[in-house]
Amino acid sequence: MTARIYLLVTSPRLPAGLLTAAAWDVVRENPVFAAAETEQAHALRKSGVPVTILVGDPETLIAELAGHEAVVWLAGPAGDESFARSLGLRLAREPGLAELELMYGSWDPPGARLLDAVAVMDRLLSPGGDPWKRAQTHETLAPYLLEESYEAFDAIESGDTDALREELGDVLLQIVLHARLAEELPEDEAWTVDDVAAGLVDKMVRRNPHVFAGVEVADLDEITRNWDDIKKAEKTRDSALDGIALSQPALSLAAKILSRTHRAGLAVPLPDGSDLGSRLLRMVAEEPDAEQALRRAALEYAKAVRAAE
Image 1 (cartoon, rainbow, N blue to C red):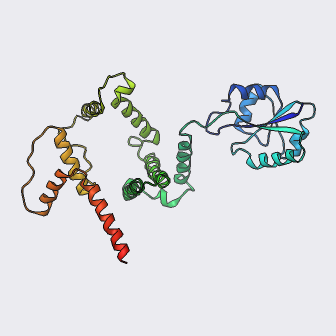
Image 2 (cartoon, rainbow, N blue to C red):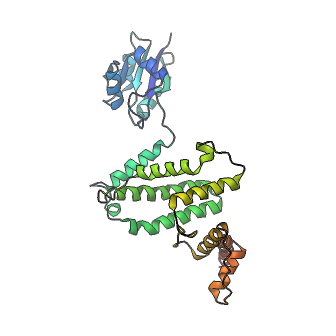
Image 3 (cartoon, rainbow, N blue to C red):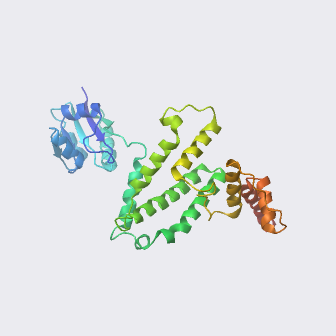
């Protein structure tokens, strides 16, 4: 019977010792080796599984096969890719010596790399990190948040999903950076990225009772009405226009004001003046997507300018 070497890979983002049943069977039934002391090795030892530290050399591990049907190599947090490659090449040169089996003892859960993003940002803003980021404030970063959002919007408009993925990463960078800066505020004002996420989760659960609370809805319009009603109850605002972002571009601001007015059932006459602003507001009332319409027209004109050049 051909001997077997299990290359056991685990997620560094899950607690050490959290393994699949199959992985536990393998480590309990066979000798376990590793190149260095790790949290995973410590967790196995605490569970009664001996872990022997070996030099990360294929020949050393192969020698440990003597007298055993199988051995386990506990990969480090980085996966030990170089060692695995060397071991695979060594076994390929001598067929029948041993079979190499990659076994995943645990996997990264969805969203696990967000933890890496938070850890990297913490390193950048901690002493010895990036001086530029450590010097920023919410106010100095505000233009970048807008810029990155516009670049993500451009990627959507272009239909380039790869570009969108990258640009959303830049938006996420801003979010994580703002959250890390907020940790440095006075104790009674400070908050963290977990507070941001917790607020988002609570809001999504509250405002989607048709998903989380068994509320029956007839159509998308009813879902929207429920969302608006719940939002009103949460915010206790005095006006239908409260909460509109006043710093957004003028055409989209006008469209939002007109939309809120309509949804509130208010019949407020539009200005009948002849000045440019009044005329533009009436045009937005006729074309709610005026921001996009002007954007498309401007981009088409830009193409014509480039062609003329």
